Image (cartoon, rainbow, N blue to C red; front, top):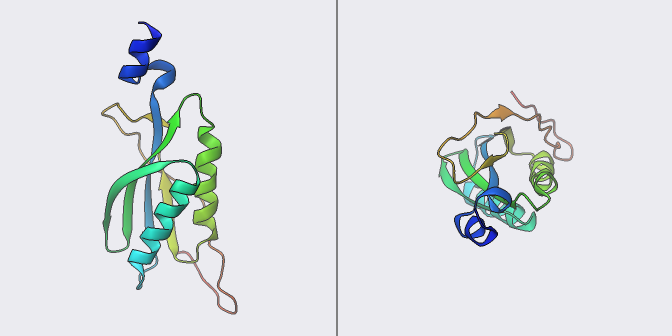
Length: 125
């Protein structure tokens, strides 16, 4: 297949790669503000996302770019953002996959140690 056709069809080196993530927040107010911060973090990492949210659960597909981009570096910035939050109870992610495929790999939990608020203890259960 010619390079022009691969680019048009997003195949090979032009495939759009991403990860599925599932974030569960510690129950509480501020879900809209959390979602705004999450979207800002994804954009700041050079990615885009789509998905759904229900109460304190956020289920997203994060597009990190093509195979030619620094996919792991971009997603690492999102992991670091999640680790800096005190209101995340769990963070799960899938393996990197081609977003044009109809199969999403299964999610695996990533250890995210939330930072405690000053003067308070925060435990992830």
